[in-house]
Length: 85
Image (tube, rainbow, N blue to C red; front, side, top):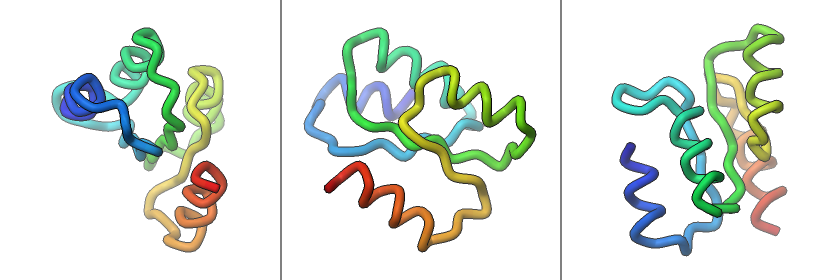
């Protein structure tokens, strides 16, 4: 919910690191809301779920990328750099 409010106030973000499991509004709902409202900022999903079905859902929803928890900092920086270069 917080990321949705932040982006609605200011769309000048370069990238969103979206946790899938959040208390008020899960990441998928927040992601869909942003895309449905024309927000095209790259979004990297972060998740502890590693089942093929979970990863396929992330891909099918249209996230730009994903990273598995626990987060490997080197991989995270590689993914961030990919979308900010």
